[in-house]
Length: 320
Image 1: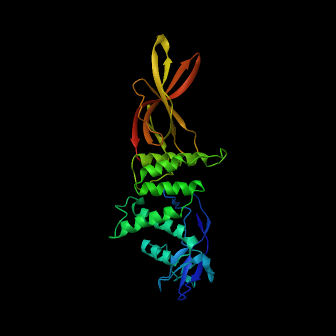
Image 2: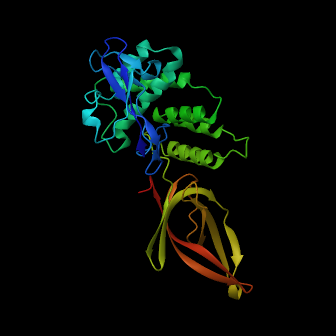
């Protein structure tokens, strides 16, 4: 990540100075995406646009102002800059975001209400104890969710997915599932098709489990070698194949079932095979599984095939 110059602005009401960082380059390493549409990328940070003056409490959009200066000092020169004592603009808190709604234009309401949703979720996104701190927080949150639902259209995947998320947050799980199942993908060449399909499966699974809170969507799974005989795979179940009957040596008949796990959105999916008593009929597509398996090579008609043979399955809520 490489930061650029700081842009200097002045409050349109009182003339107090404030500054905003800019970014020259960044990357998505160590980033995370969430079911409410928020994306947190430490090496590709966001900087506030809607902010408030720390002198007079006035709320305004920096993008509507003309910058009055620019500080391109290197880090060792900052102390000598004439802008050194100017404070950075900050993101608005929940109380101020509701204030912003009162003075916003109609076309700004959707994004501000989305930021309010994110701000409530931020309280639990990193393991916080709860979204509701003040006495009226729950009523304000519910009011905002319902208002945002009315603002969202059905004209693209992102809008429909967000509506499904809001239904899930509000505990209207059947509406969430009905909406998410109504999403069809007509463009099979869409480069994001696999990711969107995965998001659908995750949302449906969480709604089926009656989970209301925001969840992380970006980290799909991992593969870990436990010892020379055992591999542990954590991944999202994207397909459960039908049980098959196979004839093996000496006329014996075995039953087998194969499942397909997605480890991430880049690497190939993995197929794990279970035999006989380990057929796991209750597996649900979209769930996250921790599968213990071994690698085995099998000879058939003088050809050798290598399989992942499943030994144990455990359902987990999220990837560690």
